[in-house]
Amino acid sequence: MTDRDDRHMDQTLDTLFAEMRETPAVVPDALIARILSDAGQALDTRATEAATLSEARRPRGRHPWVAAAVAALGGWRAVAGLATAGVTGLAIGLGAPGAVTSLVAGYSDVGYEDAANGYGLDDLVPSFYALAAEG
Amino acid sequence: MQMPLDALRDVSDEALLVAFGNGDRSAAAALTYRLTPKVLGYATRMLRDRAEAEDVAQEAMLRLWKIAPDWRQGEAKVTTWLYRVVTNLCTDRLRKARGTGLDEVAEPEDDRPSQDAILMQRQRMDALDQALESLPERQRQAVVLRHIEGLGNPEIAEVLDISIEAVESLTARGKRALAKALASERERLGFEDDGS
Image 1: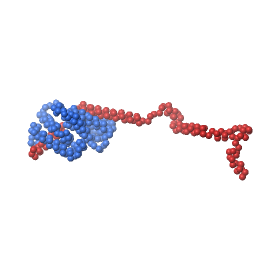
Image 2: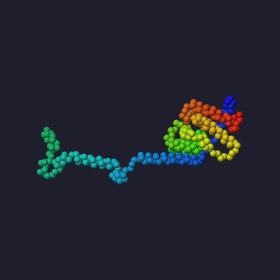
Image 3: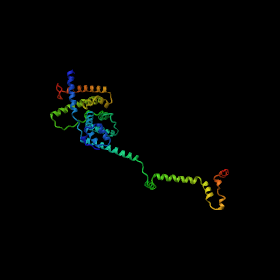
Image 4: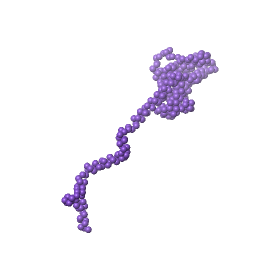
């Protein structure tokens, strides 16, 4: 082809391209409906997945009667205090029974004859008489 | 929040896609009416089969809906991403259909009134379609994206995943091949030497 032919052919192609460009594709309504339906389903699927995920992440609720009992006792702080006091009392009760009973026996038992078996002042404060003698 | 379509006319494709990712159904409608003609037109020119092109358009838009929540703003244009998806879908279908004779490919239907001008334009479009059909696949994709879809060379390079130089080479060779294929048709298509 000559330069002139080339130029003419370029113009021909440009015209054809322009005509094709200006001829928009006619989109059938049915296709639009299918595409919009897909979009709706995509949104619905995402919403369902998000709800499932949110439910899985939500902290599980306690049994109603446990919650009612805790509330009746004054809340979790009160329950914690009560539990601490209970454990402490149990530890004291199990841990030192001998010392407590001997002291109680020494001073709380009434009666003259039992007084000889009880504690004297020097039993409780061994250095009392020595200090008293020194003045 | 749902917005009327008219109010979304000036909103960018990317903003609409992000809105859809956040659950806005009206953004989906705006994107559908805006992008489907491009997607369908490109797929039709690639496949020359209206039903297949519609399937490709629907599949490409479905992929767009699915990627919307994860769309990374500012990285790629929505249309570039879509053209790439359509290119890949068309390539897959053309490879699967290879071996199907051209005679088996249905011609698009047209029931418009047969006025001379419309007939002539139809003849021209058919001639260009057939000439495009004769091009190798990559040349056809590059020529259609450049001269009919109106994309720039850098964007075409992104769509086809090749260099800009390769795009220039493909479009130049494609245009030369089209000129050769249509040279004998100029008179029949109503072109005079003044290029009309």
